[in-house]
Length: 175
Image 1 (cartoon, rainbow, N blue to C red):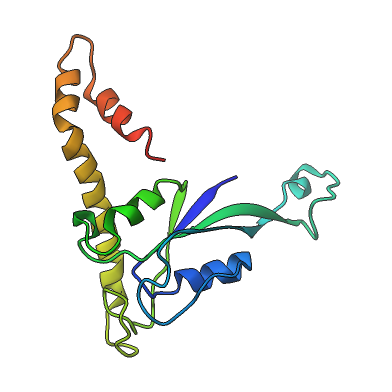
Image 2: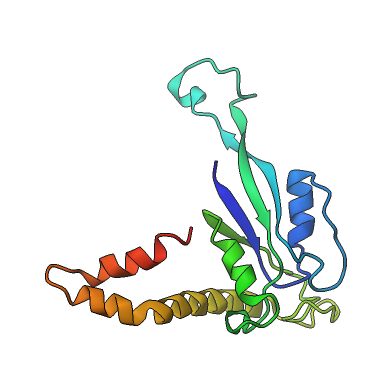
């Protein structure tokens, strides 16, 4: 079963989405870091059933649609400089490793600042939240590469070695 992690800054609606999608009883509040430890649950996605295209009879769908189970992980909010350990930093990023894909939840109303504090609707640019999450994840990957760089370069200098293989070995255990 595919696993999706809900990522975003604190107080942007990750737990609200998680609760609605899984019907799990999780705490929801209007302040940053309501979620400290990740929440795990199962949600369902409506998908077109292949039986219709294959002209088969299926008991698992209704009107050509079926509900497919998806694991969801609701992780703590990410703040700027998390890759340096700010907020829950590396713990948050480490929780994302468990996912096959990441769903970025954004406060499109612009009602919370970059650290999840309420600032009033329209007082924060949601595009900044998109940019900072991409930056933080990029810097997290950079940090992993940097930590292992001497080993990667040493291994890739051997006869018949390929640097891509050495890099892949570092990241193979992440997800």
